[in-house]
Image (tube, rainbow, N blue to C red):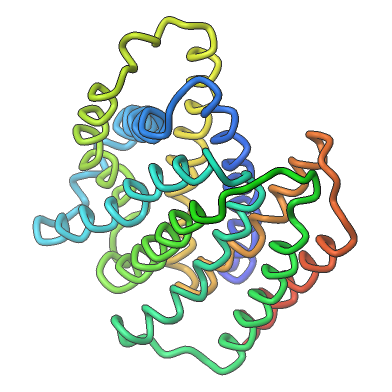
Length: 288
């Protein structure tokens, strides 16, 4: 399969997986606090990846481990907790919308800190995508749920982390196999996540039924939404560009809104307009 076709297939798959992650976080928080959820997400994913990918760690050169550690910090560890904290006060759909700031931060960081050059149409595409995002934000609270938008700052910080991660991988780890990067990431994060988990009251409520239900959702989130998704995301970065890879975040709110519709939420015509504008921005940003 040609790389041009493969990158669009991967982009679509990632949009579905990560678009579903926000509802999984919401369900997981019913029986867990944000730090427990973030830690279990990392631990479940680490166990899965070390089981299937431990041999791939040999492909990481000694001098590359510092970059693997940095990408683990910015790409998963910090955002795993930030999004869980944010969703205690902000709806999952709004969080998914705010996540679309990642491509803008990727562009800015790539140009300033990593010396990457971007075309004029990429800048225009990102601006158009953000206009669509703004439309979704102002029309996203269709059920009248009260959101504490100060917690949106946690999502904004997470998007900066994601943008840093994308540029680090493209600049320093492009020659490392995606499975090696991802497995190395979670090997680095495993012990810190376990320490954070057992510093909470998890041991006192781990046998409660609601905790078991939440852990099931976090298991899916960790293995599929984090482990499998990260492997194919790193592959996408390697066969495309940081901007194309991060543009998946434009599609994530659309998937999140579909989950909301199935959960009896109302999707307004303005939200559909915002989704169309976002897709137009993605197309423009990636047109040669």
